[in-house]
Every structure is written in structure tokens, then in C-alpha cells.
Amino acid sequence: MVNIPISAPPRLDGQVAFVTGAAGGIGSEIVRTFLAAGATVIATDLLPDNPFADEAKVDYYRYDVTDDGETDRVVSAVLEKHGRIDSLILCAGAISNQSLADASDAEWEKIWRINVMGVVNPLRRIYPVMVDQAYGKIVALGSIAAKIGGVASGPAYVAAKSAVHGIMKWTAKSGASKGVYANIVAPGPVETPMWEKCNDGSPPSPTANSNVPLGRYGQPADIAQGILFLCSPQSNWITGTTLDINGGMLMD
Image 1 (cartoon, rainbow, N blue to C red):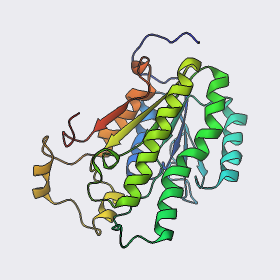
Image 2 (tube, one colour):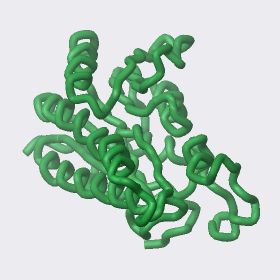
Image 3 (tube, one colour):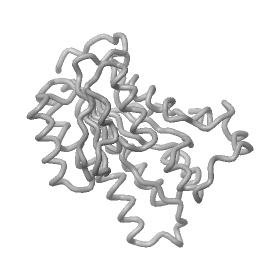
């Protein structure tokens, strides 16, 4: 059992954070938030060109999280340059709103590969690195959909995000004695391009805010700040938990 430090202020100076899905609406906000907290950020996504070229402390890698060979390539390059990975933020994902009757095998496979294997591939390569360091904080983007059976999403997405929740609980139990933390952030509806895609390209309707007790939909900063909390020293006695960030749509 390693010595677990007492919780402390939310600075990440000198730390290296690895972010998947970094070019998305939530992912890009995570990159900015972690930079402001002092971290060096490894930003990964499918874009061929670096969307963070103006940021000195961001290393960008084109990375398909469904490709295990690419995982080895990218993680090896990061470790060769930086020597460690302190935080892993698993933000890559895809949504599906197709019904049970309409979702094809191909749709199920696509959603599973991106949302589940897109967590498993980087996790199984980076988790041992953190064990060797005797320190690491892992946060996966789950979803309120996994807890209530969906909001605007279909069963393939609900099933995939439910699997992510289970994988992170296993990781938390396995890593607790080794100094490795694992938690989930489960957002409600957040105003991002992916959210609009799930709603046929339409922006959120103001009238739908009546479903959210706090009166508005989420913004990427709401999610990024919660993830920063779970990756910072503020949360040194928290593992295996789900942080629900949903404006009060789900009250456990």
C-alpha cells in the first residue's frame, strides 16, 4: 500500500495530462483548463492538423483510440519525451440516438468500439505506467444516460457508457492500493456539436430547460472543472466515484 497524500489545492504544475477526444467541445475545454492549472497537456484526436498549435505546453498527436497499435505508438512517444503520465482523461466518444429497432449491427459495433474500446485501449497501456509511478489519476467521461437509461440517446450509447462506468469501478478497486485513482464524470446534456448532432443538428430549445432544475443546459467548462477537481490534489481521498454534473436532472 502506497502512502495516499492528504488533499491539497488544485494545481498541476509539473504534471503531464493525457487527453483523448481533445478537439471536441468538452475535450478542448479540458485542455485549456488543465493548461491554466499548470499542466503540460498531451492532446489527442483524429484531426490531422494540430488545433492547439498556438499553445506552447500542448503536444498534439493524431490518435485513433480504437486502434491498439496507435495506442502503443502514441504512449511510447509521450513517455520517451516526458517520462511520465500523471493524469489520463478519457474523453473520446460518439453518440447514437437510433432506437433498438433501427440500430444496425454496424451501429452497435461503431458505438462500442469508440466509447468502450476507446477507453480500454489507452487505459490498459497507461494504467501500468501509473502503477510503476505509484501515482496517477484517471477520469473517464461517462453519462447520465448510463444511470437513467438515456436522455436523447439510444440503447447502443446507453449500453456503451454503462460499460465505461463498470470498467472505471474495476480500475479504482485495482489501483487503490497502488496510488492510482479512477473516477467517472457523468454529464447531463451539454451544449456541444456532438449534443446537437444527437438532436438532428438543432441547438437546444430554451423551453427544454424546464427539465433541468438549475435552469440551463451544461457548458463544457462545467464538465472540465469537475474533471480538474478529480485529477488535482483536491481529490486525494476520492476514487471509484461518479461525479454527476447535470444541473439537478438526477439527484442521487
